[in-house]
Image (cartoon, rainbow, N blue to C red; front, top):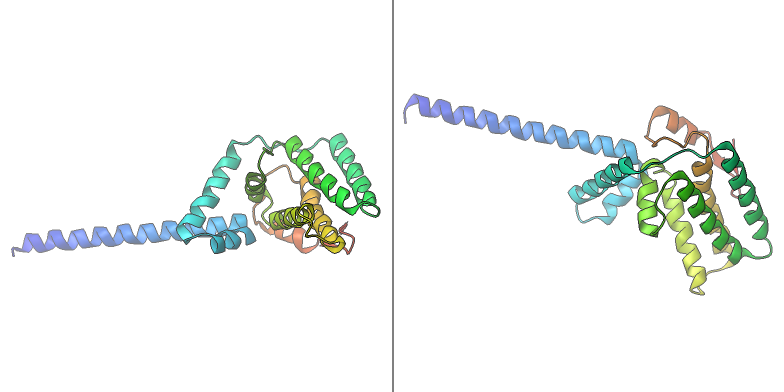
Length: 206
């Protein structure tokens, strides 16, 4: 084989290796970006998907859909009104726990709609809110699951109490003044969550 042919082959191998290396770096960067943005939601999606590729494609699609939504902050008046309504719902729980959980679910949907999130389908609501609030979206899913169990006659008062606590975790972030921008796993966000605790009654303590 002539020397020039070996040169061509070697050049082709080098190009192929460069392409492979570039692709691997790009995929690693994409993974790091998605992990940074979605935090625990990345792991949850990965566990429930058939492959890493499909999980990351789903998360990327959520982020792209989120960019198309007109998510806006609550006005001060709306924020105050919703907090007062939550306090009423929490008080209702003492005598009517099942009704209170139903009211809490409806209240969260009202807040989401006011913020600009579509609210027609629960799974889509959870997917949309997971982009901005990945640290608490699983609370929303668990609260919804417990509330559904109650509607099927399989719940208990303790389940309802837990549902209220789960709902409260998302509610607090939705009405938080700083929640008008998409959340990323930045140092500031990490510090916020590290200094925020939820007490036994589901109220946020700082």
